[in-house]
Length: 467
Picture 1 (tube, rainbow, N blue to C red):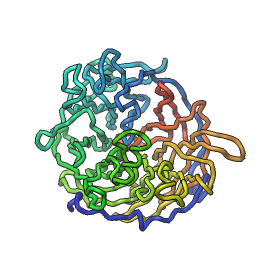
Picture 2: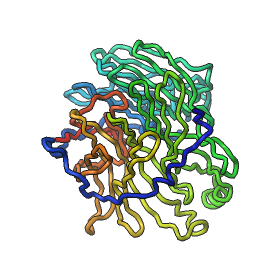
Picture 3: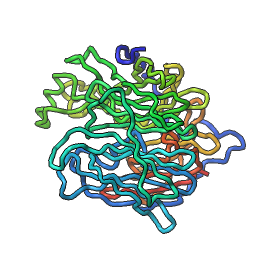
Picture 4: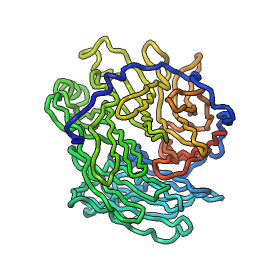
């Protein structure tokens, strides 16, 4: 199982799409309460100043920065240091929601660039992935030390415990971590993964005994057909840890790999770099302590027309199927006239159900574009209720029946991947891009969804009850 040598290109096999735009595809099981979203809270958490370092509070997109255990809700954040120079010009923050509102309970001292994802165990302990720099204050970039902070939910005013993950060797970590931090909340286990350059990521597994007992590398898929054959670095993945199995879905993030396109983009932008985000890859490990991953699977690709893919979430169904959620943009319109004049623009929110390394079902939850509609999807997440039902919450905007709209919606997904009727969630300010209390971070299944999202220079919180 040499994960960096083989790419199974499932995208071509799964090129069909079941068009579905806010329509009902199935009915909830008899006895299940009907979906009836109700907003329980909508409020400000904190405000921030621009970082100007290429990052921001939503940068760790595949993770989450909000967790809940019982009545305790915690959110991580960033503070820009006014007299510090980028890149490491931020401090990590932790906020807790109390009856009187949000309170900052932690302000770290280690300068950093990126936001820190959170995880929670079923005993209530909260874990915070940080990546403090080891550089001097005037240094532009340099080495960093991955660190995990542990908070006792009953003692937020006490200093957190500090854990240093163990690694295979001495990897050269930097402020550009693109890291993944997920938990198996019921087993009390953690998985941390950080990118190293463009060839691979380093990972470390913390078991239920509190030991970082397994480490290794996840090597990126290799593409021989680019202008210059190279590894395909993957970033912003959605990752799940369940019973020591790890599931990973990430998007390509490399400098434009085709010479002709890169040169033309330079004529447009004046920049010698322009990153591609247009190939969605998946792999998994049957037991992370073995260090082995399966060969890479390419779930979807917009490589032919220089499009765009954004992975949003991943869910491991109790029956073994893997649900992967992402958005697509069909093409880069700057290049269309010269390179693919007949291509049509399309925007979609996509769901694929994988079984045994093959795509069992692929559905367009929402689609718009030329010849379709004026609707475009935004951020989206999967959510599991206390009784095991699966839902998708997403943002959509556009024109419907002559009226411009922008809102969040929730729909149920059945075990086969069919989508139920979408219900509007009328937040005063819709959440266009957001984190949730995902089970991938150890949050227990819940009949309410906690959201943390950015609006301008404000981080906002929302809570919605499903039924």
